[in-house]
Image (cartoon, rainbow, N blue to C red; front, side, top):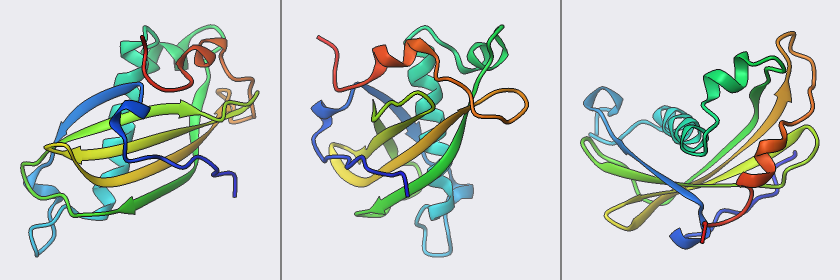
Length: 147
C-alpha cells in the first residue's frame, strides 16, 4: 500500500476547491448518492485543479513528453451521506510527490459540513503504459493554500 496521506477536516489545509452538484441518476433507492459516484467527483476536481494551475490535463497527456496520471489507489472515508442536488465543494491538495508518484487529498463538504475525505495515489506513465518521470510543474502544486 502506497497511501500515506491523511486528509484533514480543515478546509484551509487544501490548495484548491471545486464545486460539483450531485445528480439524481447517482442516487440509490434510499435517495443517497451511491459510493460509486465519488471517484468521478474526485477526478473532476483534480482536472479542474490542473486547469486552474495552467496545466490542462488534455495538454499534459498530449504534449511532447505526454504523461498520464494513472490511479494506483483510491480510499474514501464516508462521514455523512451526499444526497441529490447537494452542492459539494471538493477541497484538493497534492502531497507526497516522488519521481514517479504523488498523492492527492480531498475533503468533500456541503454547506461547510464535512461529508467525506479521500486520497488517490497516482503514478506517472507514458503513452505505452510504462512508468515515467513526474512533470516538474507538479512540485509547484504540492502543499496547502496559496498566499
